[in-house]
Length: 137
Image 1 (tube, rainbow, N blue to C red):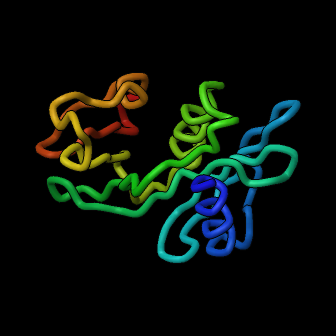
Image 2 (cartoon, helix red, strand yellow):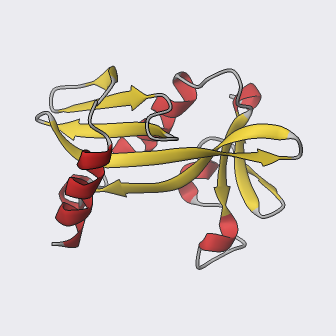
């Protein structure tokens, strides 16, 4: 199972799950600043990692932004709103050095359309990036 192998590999990279920034009856979301040259927002189910939002940084128009390297959620835990909650955790706990969140659109099959998850947060297109500006939230 590809997703299981990927999650095991990620877990070896992210040893410390970090501070809990969201919790409900079944799930927790944790936040780690600058672990292994990046920020990680981790989705836990019964204290096992089932999702990861992997974030680096990029400069756009002389402003520093978080750069979404990728998001992966175990298929058994998708379509429950936790991807959005992981983005919200990043927004709510962002470092003040960053102006927003950016996703490189040219990595996507449809390079013109801003992803739905970004639309939820009022993203705009800036060149080859969809960006969410913290000042607009």
